[in-house]
Image: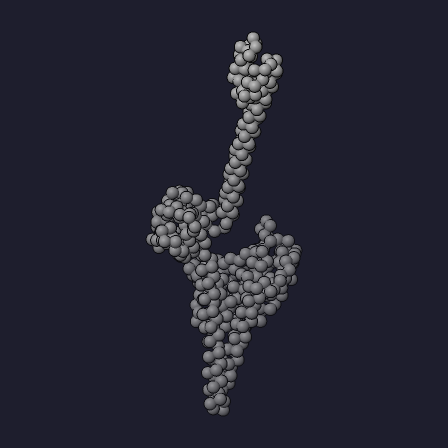
Length: 423
């Protein structure tokens, strides 16, 4: 080894410390030539630095990738949260848009959410959230249905009658939420009007059957009597024929009124509401009823201001007035009076038919325009009424955008008033 051996060995150890990976290569060069060894050490240090930088770059890229993944996850969570909020808003809007009342309960049956329609069905100022069905409606059957839906997953339909100034009937459909969601949902539907219409339909069918049965039974009975030999009876045969004729007319009127009501209900009779002069319509109606009034010695008069007009259908209004005048003449005793008058009140026109007849008790007035409703059934049938005239009046007036009302005093008389828009 030369005199420079110790120096080479020092350089070797320095380079070996700086770049252990190239120690063997630097050692080989150190025993030969110091400059070359120094050059090799420097190269090794540069390579080590490059490797270190590459390692740092890899770590930076790894951190950047991890940061990107975290950002993606955060963005995904944010999107999921926004989607959940959007779904919540949509469901909330849909819930509020439902016309029926809706509530959702937890597993214990307490209400956790409801819509505005439910508050309108229940007491407006009543607190609903957190309350159970038994507290809110005090109906054991509804409470039991909700609890069974929550605990056993059994759906049910319950009818709840709510008492008060305006009694209502609610049909409540209760169902479990399903899946892993605990609790139940209930939909409250106000079926008060449906129940009323169903009751009216049932009454209507029963009344029609009864009203048809009476004249048909009379016609069949007297026809069979005549066929059995009474036709040769010069005294009683003409009376029987007259009864058959009268009952046939009544049956014809009944069928005609039923068909008219059916057309009105189905809107098969379109009305043309236009400005109509009342003078001409009133004149035609009174002329049509004059013979019947004269036969009963009932005085019939009318007072219509010149030029007074209303928005109406001319034929429908004439039918309304004829029905009201016929009703007035029918229930006014001989020597009484029937007066038809009209006046304008701001933007309305009032047509009134007043009689000096028997009058009507106050308890009958709210139901007077119902089909087949009669104050005195026996008297009405004797006078030939079908029980549908006033119902037809109400339908026609309503179709013309008007209203009809009645005032009466027992033993004094009645006044029927039709209110229409002025023209």
